Figure (spheres, rainbow, N blue to C red):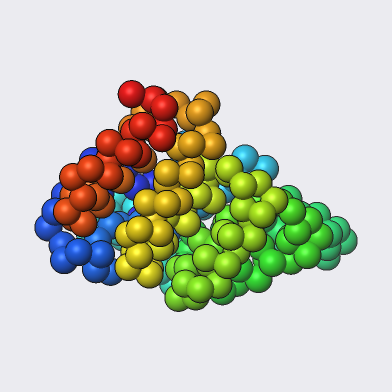
Length: 234
């Protein structure tokens, strides 16, 4: 699946068309909202610490003519080639969290989520309080089918940084799509808005739009007024 960040404009039509809180309710994207709210980046893109540019699913399935599409196996082979020099460096610097995160990002992008999670876990063994890495781990766990593990990692990340916008955004998305828990999603997003007054207007609007769509599906005509009131940004 294309590693696109969810926006209100892409999520809203699906909210209206799909059964309430079904698996197809919102297209999360492989990276969910990783990095979106604070940096505008995604799990699909290697973190700023790296310089390599992995092939995304958009490259593999939509950006090229039918006869030139890259298969998933080809993507994986390219990932192995891309990861090889980083893995070589890790042999002499096994505790380099930057290298571990770069390798994890490459594997996540090519749908090798278990391997990605392994490298993120290795990085967290060295720096367990790194919220950004833990949020990336949560994304890989979610894509590998471990919903409870993903939520647990986000909750742990929030013990280190209770207002982390990316972790709260992803927690809401996973609770909504993975758990079918709209109230849990709304609670995460309300907390996000309350604890991040510095959030840019467009990203704040994205969160509010998602909340409004969820509340509409829940038949809650008054909850949004409360959310805006708690937000403090009219």
